[in-house]
Length: 242
Image (tube, rainbow, N blue to C red; front, side, top):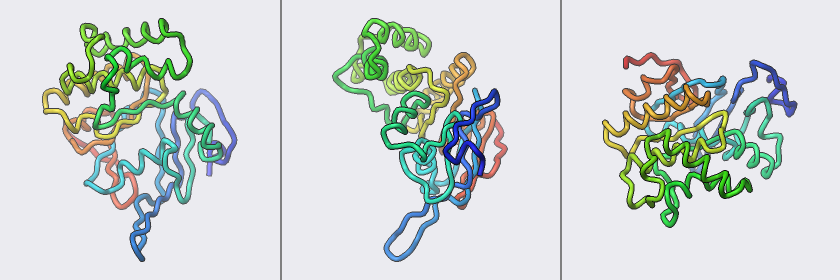
């Protein structure tokens, strides 16, 4: 196992944003055991674009949870920006996750009682940034994703695509090194989904944030630089036609 995964922080110019080595995850179902992840390795470098595809129930969401430190692997290790996350306390792991990672889900999870700019600013306010600083940063990001005229609208006043773009802005507000996205366009029509993907790729290029996306949509996955298929608990390189 690499040094970065044994509890030693190793920082260098080529340190991956995320590095998983030998990850196993087994679930017990009655008297049987279901191996969801098997000796899985994954490296994500700065500004990388990776899509993971696979059949329903193959373990894609489980993989994201393990990579983010939300679910503990049975074997193996995961390092974020050179720091072995499972050598940390739960509190320290949460702090590292908040600082280094952003999350986008199939359902936007915006808070209904707050406006778009308030929702996007929330992570900065939780990090004890000033209200003016948080609102300024949120406004800039919302403008980048085409919502400059929707700042004061609440989620119920936004379309599905607009809500998801606001969720993307919220995921990026802390300038994370990596965004983990679980079916980020699963609830959107084809045209809106393509637009949301385009927004993510533009932000990847502009901000240098790496994106790791789990999706069932092979047409959209084909737009990413690297595609893997999760099959039998392991990641296999996949070539898709755009």
